[in-house]
Length: 141
Image 1 (cartoon, rainbow, N blue to C red):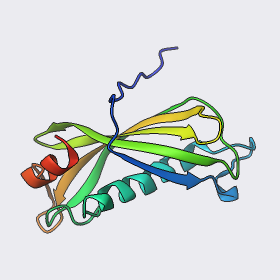
Image 2 (image 1 turned 90 degrees about the vertical axis):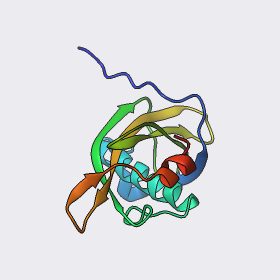
Image 3 (image 1 turned 60 degrees about the vertical axis):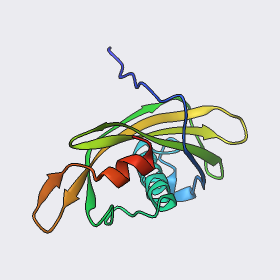
């Protein structure tokens, strides 16, 4: 079976912490795979906020998800504090990638690696636009 491999950045510009809630636990007794996507969504919102942005206001435009990839490395359990390091990269004329490295703060175990592709979206005209230059500069492109 071929496994997905993510090329992760060497440096992350943002760090946040989230605690695994009991509602994040699946029938296997550990952090559910769909809940990892929810955690990185929260981390992305906090990352954008650190630059004065939101998912609906990036230099006057919104964002839209293009894709997501998650590579699971270890289990996490209710009450675990997860450290999520976030970085932006791979800027292009249609968007960029946001990278996430999730580790268990106490043990240091890598829980997951993830990437989401986002585009800047003009909701008024229902079309993707090139990322504004100020956005690219702020996020490190």
